[in-house]
Length: 282
Image (tube, rainbow, N blue to C red; front, side, top):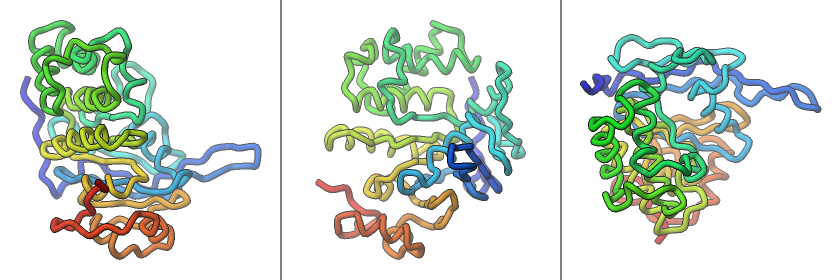
């Protein structure tokens, strides 16, 4: 299979404009997203930061076409890197296959997202079959799955293991490999190191660092240390609005919005790394 054309770094892979999302509650209508604009370009690693309730999870679901916005639109480039194409959530089978190939997701609870009946290798093969890229059980699918597992540090000895036989960090890396399998232009990772202890956290951060060498990356997180380690740019949501969208170093060292300053102040004081990022705690 021919790999998709990689868009130029200055061209948006994904573009969200004027996103509004409202929910009905017993207390009335709640606006969770309020006019959000966000672009992600080829080669970028972008953090989506904010406190609980800021709208991060809702924005992620809209970007993944799992929910339709009440106003605004999401557009993306397909595998050929051509013109931006509007993304419209539909339940009809195959309607968004082009988008699922271009944009993949690493869920927060990766172990729970893995089918307990499938081995690590089979789990990574799964999207290749579902998206019509390879036949089930074909040599090409197995080779691609093995390549992706090895690219995120999952040794061949673990390829036959099922989720219950994997550690949390190993399961998370299998989920990352699964997202990489269709050769997406963009990977969206939801709280990828949440709840992991220090050694497993380091493994997952290493795997995501490998991802960003070849694929644009958006990391949804409230973890500033992970954001500093992974992301060149940080966008911050507060009460459903995007209040900052600047280089990560600038956001973390000179926050302009009060909510961002509060998040930064909650981080232990650590010296800046030579690259401008904040090193992870030991």
